[in-house]
Each structure stands twice: as C-alpha cells, then as structure tokens.
Length: 338
Image (spheres, rainbow, N blue to C red):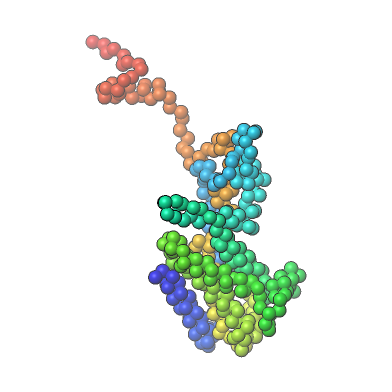
C-alpha cells in the first residue's frame, strides 16, 4: 500500500540518524554538515521555484470565482469572490492565506434513495488544516529561541503562551500536540475517505508521516528521553550554526540527531514537493488575478506578432487554388489572354 512506503522511508531515516550519530566523528556530520546542506538546498530550491513561476506568462484570465462579478449597477457585486480591483484581490488573498476561506466552504455530497443527491457542509478539513498549519507556524517561530541570543520578546512571549497551561514538567506545548494531532488527522482522512484515498499518492502521505515523526521526536526529547539531552550544548550548537561557528560540546543524545535529521529531510524535500504551495499560493493566477475580463481585454503574452489577415487578402493569396478546388470566391480569376 502507498502509505506503507512513507512509513518505511521515515523508519529508515530514523535508523540512519540514530545509528549513525553514535559513530565516532559522525555527530558533527549530523549536527552541522547535514543542516547546512539542507538549508542551502531549501533556500536555493525555494527561490528557484518561485522565480520560475514568476517568469511564467499567464495565457488566459483564469481566476477562480464563485460569486457574481462586477456587472450592471443594479446587480450586486460579490467583491471577495469576484474581485475587480487590486485591493479586493489583496483582501481575498489575505483571507485565503490566513483563514483558509475556500476550505471553510467545503461541502460533501451523498446519494440517497430516489436517487437523490444532497450537499452538506463539511468543516472538518478546514479545522484540521487550521490546527496543523498554525501549530506548525508557531513551532517554527518558537524554535527561534534556540538560534537567537538574546531571544526577542515576541518569541519569548509565544514560548510562554504556548505552554501557559503548565501541563506536565516541563510544560507541554499546545502547538506540539496540535502539530501531531493535525498531521495524524490529515493522514487519517486520506485513509478513511475512499474518494481521497483513491487519488492519494506516496508524495501525499510521506510529508504527513515525516512531519508527524518530527513532532513525536520533539515531544519525546522534551518529555521522555531527556537523558543525555544537554539544552546548553544544543543552544550553543544552534547559535553556532547561525553565526557560522558551530561547536558540539559533549554528548547531546541520539534522539536530538534523529530530530534534526528528520527536519533536514523535510527542508530538502520541501522545494520539490506539493509543500511548495507555501510559495505558490501567492503566484496562483486563479487567486491573484482580477475578475475584470468583461471590462479589460486580457492579451495572451505568448501570442506571436501576426498582422491581421482579412478574407479579401486570404482570397487574393489563394484564389487560384480555391477555384481549382471548386470553392466559391467573391472575385473571379482574371480572364487569361490567348
């Protein structure tokens, strides 16, 4: 089964980092070399994909709308669903990026006896997406406390707010639980929903399993496998990576290198996967174009520079062949001289 390959791949990655980091001299490889290479590939790949998308011409006006476009004055215009101005497009994009507005309208259809089809609201996908993405965002921002010295107040506040309920010792982060739960729910949806399962590929399952493993290893390192985890040494290594003077002092623990290796794998995989919707959403012509095709002519940038060719010109050029083929012409061939 397709999802089994994803689990197998993640298990292999865990074994590589877990065993490899215990070999003499290899902690530097997993703790310094791998992160640098992963970040370089991530940044280079991300920029390359975005530049390639930005350079691609848009041959047609293909904005996606599900509301009334601007028309006559007495017809109500849906400004968010069919934006006509730049400000309306920006408002639509912001709502899509920060609230997943299109997913909020998600519906499901069912066929009943009759036959009769019904449509019902289905907010589960929107809820799973919100939990997963915002948890991921806060986890990334929260980890900046390891790389920055001194720690910015915004990051420190997020770290405090994320663990404000003080569940366990050390306190459990709500976003860690949200990230793990969100990944598990999105993965389960691809298994339970037969329609989604049918169209799901390995590259749909793998990032969810990988992110789930990242969240679990992070939680294990914080709450359960704390032996050998030297937070001071980790902080020194993280700051050293940012300042290009990395140092590994003492034993940090295999679970740390497993966690870092999984994160590095995600960074390398990111620019070449569907996860690039992070950058692609801003460049999607279905979202960032105005719905003004009634008022403004959209010219295909791929169109070659062809001079207009009237029918009269066409007939002048091919009249002899048209007459020979028996095709009626408006202007007869000139009489041939004897």
